[in-house]
Image (cartoon, rainbow, N blue to C red; front, top):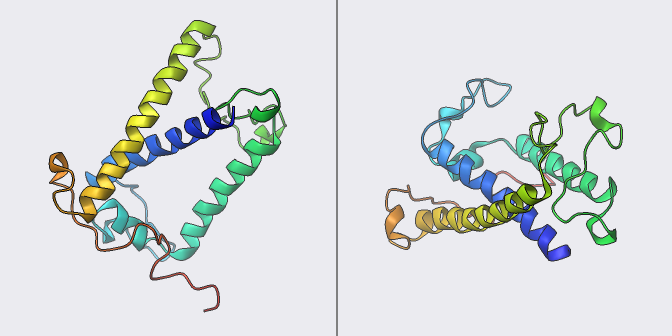
Length: 176
């Protein structure tokens, strides 16, 4: 249960990261201002440079929201270590939280609720494999941006001078 749940969760995060990297690297971004002072998303080039350009408070909001989702998944519904389904994110409607979050993370449009068990099992296998591929893909992007020639097929990835292992580098000080 635990390992399958972790693999599902990490695969989903990797798929979002891979998709986000591809979209941002091709110049697509939100049309509104990035900050309250009007700074545009155009201020940085590559996706990691865009992350570095985000103000600290915005980064903390993202981390807090992801932390909330993680906390909610641990306390709501039947836990995956106590008979629940590994990889299943609990519905907001099950706890009454749908008044705040009107759509669920899984199937927000309600298109897959009547899926057969066989189709669901195949879909989970596809999701696991896509997650594994996305994990390799996002790390390929990261390696290509740090070590020139490390991924020959990704020679077009722009170099990144920052440090992936320090996501708050340059603008994080609790005591400032």
